[in-house]
Amino acid sequence: MIKVENLVKRFDRFCALNHANMHVPEGSIYGLVGPNGAGKSTILRHITGIYRPDEGSVLVDGAPVYENVAVKSKIAYIPDDLFYFLQADTLEMKRFYRGLYPDFDEALFEKLREFFPAIDVKRRIRRLSKGMQKQVAFWLALCCRPRLLVLDEPVDGLDPVMRRQLWSLILGRVQEQRTTILISSHNLRELEDVCDYVGIMHNGKILLEHSLCELQNTVCKIQVAFAQGVPALPKAFEILHMSNLGRVYTIIVRGNPLDAKKELEKLSPLLIDVLPLTLEEIFIYEMGGADYAVKDILF
Image (tube, rainbow, N blue to C red):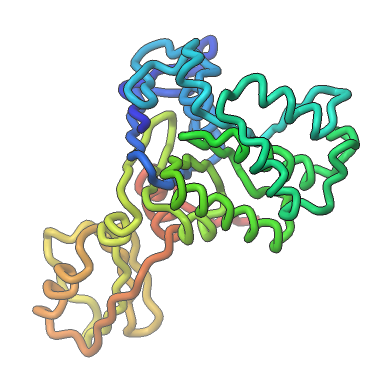
């Protein structure tokens, strides 16, 4: 669905995207994560056709997206910084979207009113709360029936009930219409619940991208104890982190969990246990390898 190849974007002397590559399969939910300033919003603005690439290519459905009306009519984008016309209410924005998107669904708009009962559709959107403004954005975007829905910090500022409702709507779009969803978010716990694929971005590049299942099988956490401290570990071990509490050592290792366990069992440990890593832990340890580790601050 999305193919980004060697994408470069510079703002004066600052290189925001440095030969970035990203591939999002059709009908998937892809989570894009990374530290602040990694280039996440910049790459989203290329995928939605807002920015022109300095180098490289951005293809959506096999076609360049920049200044391509036919491709853009299949994309709905909810940015972190929402924009509405100053005097517009929800009904006026609906008419505006209807003029832009040939597949805009009036019946779906009416059906979704029950999901957003607190929104006064005749009140100026800019007078609504931040959370309600975001609800309006989702309401309109879903009614466009996009083939690609791009979300930048989608549920930031929403209460827990509305967050759950919106995730339910998003997942329903994927199941019913095979809509491709691209999400940039710092809420890794929520992404872990909904994403099929994850890309980790840093310094304008995608460091790695895998299905969530594959990603969780490339880094593992092992708790192990030995009678006389830790013996020499196998040379093949790529240790990302190691700490201990008494005899019990916690080792974060890059590689398949079962293979790592077999290697450690050869050293006759007193106990050994392989534990699952959360997406947040994977992000922290991968970023540690990219010189973005959590540092102790001494005062």
